[in-house]
Structures are given as structure tokens and as C-alpha cells.
Length: 197
Ligand code: SF4
Image 1 (spheres, rainbow, N blue to C red):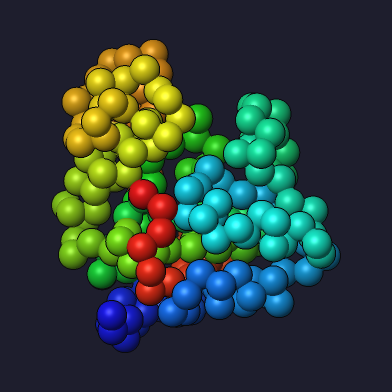
Image 2: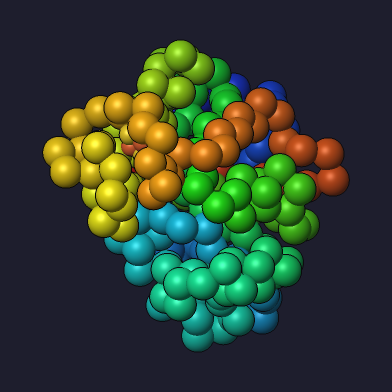
């Protein structure tokens, strides 16, 4: 797809951007960019599919609760000086939307470290904010609920949100990043492949 306009719109909002055709090219880029850093990962199927944790581990200290699931590991990841996550949805006009259960990821994207990278497959791109929120609630969240075996009405078929009140509800905090938060640098890495949920 043509990323010219979406890049312009994100850059108007203070983000730097990159576009890669494949996840391997994106992983190579980040491997070159990030060396001798402390890096925290947000929960992400996209990052898992890219194999980014393993790729960065050779030259960095990388903390990811997907490898060691615990609240303490999430807190440790939030002390890193670089943060990498994906997005549940982005808009063509240059905004990012994420839904969290524990809030570790949304916290780091709002008041995080020096630099935050968003790694975004083309399936996350939506026309506008209405579509982005719809995608977060009815596409990304049910699939993530299924992935983590949540006991929620959406997890079985991953077909839509039922706006549950389950103790296992994974949709507890939603954030929209309209502009790069003051004091942070943020880069959106678009990959022209379908990745994650
Ligand atoms: S609110 Fe409940 S039903 Fe809706 S997507 Fe989240 S976990 Fe699933």
C-alpha cells in the first residue's frame, strides 16, 4: 500500500516514521538502531511474530512479561530507557489507539522512556478514530482474550465484544495518542504485512 499520506500525517503529529515491506527488514532496522540499551516490551502478538525479543537480546537487556508473566516483570519493563510495542489500531490521520488490561503498556506510551517505538502491521490501519476504536474493541480485544484464554464471552469465537463485566475482562484502559507526548520521542514502524491482532 502507499504510505505517503499516513506518514505525512503521523509526522505532522510529531512522530518519526519508517516503512518496511517485511518483518525481517523491520527487525534488522531495530537491531541496528538499538544496541547496549535497556528495552521494555509491551504485550504484543506482532512483536512475537517478528521474533523481535530474540533479535534484540544479543546486544541489549530486554524485559518482556510475555516471556515471564508477572506484574513485577511488567514494572521492570517500565523502567527501561526504550519501549517497544504495537498498536491495536492506528488511523490514517495519524493517531494511535491501544486497550490494556493492566495498564503497563498504555502508561509507557503516555509517560514513558526517552523513546517509544510502535511496530504496526497494515491490518492495524483504519480510516478514522471511530473505526480505530471499533477495531480495538471488536477485533483486537476478542482475539487477545482468546490468545490468553480469558474467561470472557468474546474469547471462544473472538467474533466481537460483548462489553462484559467478567473478572477476566481484558479491556480496562483505552488510550488514544493524538500527538507525541511532551518529552518523548516516538517512532511508528509500518510493516506492509498483516501482523498480530
Ligand atoms: S469487554 Fe469483555 S467481551 Fe468485550 S472484548 Fe473486552 S473482554 Fe471481550
